Length: 144
Length: 135
Image (tube, rainbow over the protein chains, first blue to last red):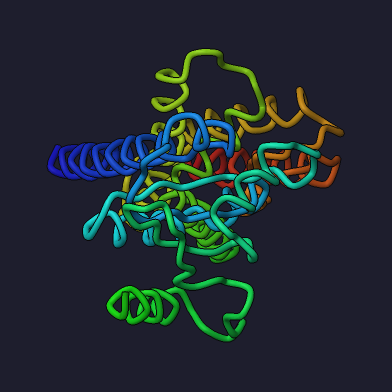
């Protein structure tokens, strides 16, 4: 009887934890926009944008989740998912408008719409782990 | 009996590893299941993904704790039959929204090898726990 109760308790705690994590992740993905959505809805956006390739998002989800949670503490944060496998005019327009040269990268958009690259993940050493990259992002953000 | 216990531990390691990855990446697991496109309702899919992860965790616990083998037998068969059916229905298909982290139960490309491994696990549960229930 005690064993059954213990197993039920573990199952309940685990279910609640997974449900909460899953719902949190799903609500985070609502902040992911396509270039078209960003260009239409965020004319006077001020804050951070995290831009990445659509295909890589699911692979690096936990990393982008940590980045988003960290950046949104400080200022509004939006994630833009670019599909480079198809030719799209909006992709080019967004890259030109925000002066984006590297994908994936993090940019800060000030009140006048001027974009500053905080960090791009292309130049980061492959040997760095997630915590080290997060520390690097924190340092770069503090400089701005 | 020693051989059965060794097999039990090996089976436990397989489930422990699988459930650990799924607990760490529940969103990716949800997306992998979503990509298989067998449930239209997202709420049901959230429930199913949660349920599958918890069931695998329970399977590991049953291997550690001295419990009635019939519970593990039933849970194990249920979980493995689900995965085998799911993989059979999607054999040869390639999934884009898959992080390729669940090669055992929800691979990005479903091959005969994936199904064979899952059938092997199903048979292992059947033999090991069938033996424990009988003797």
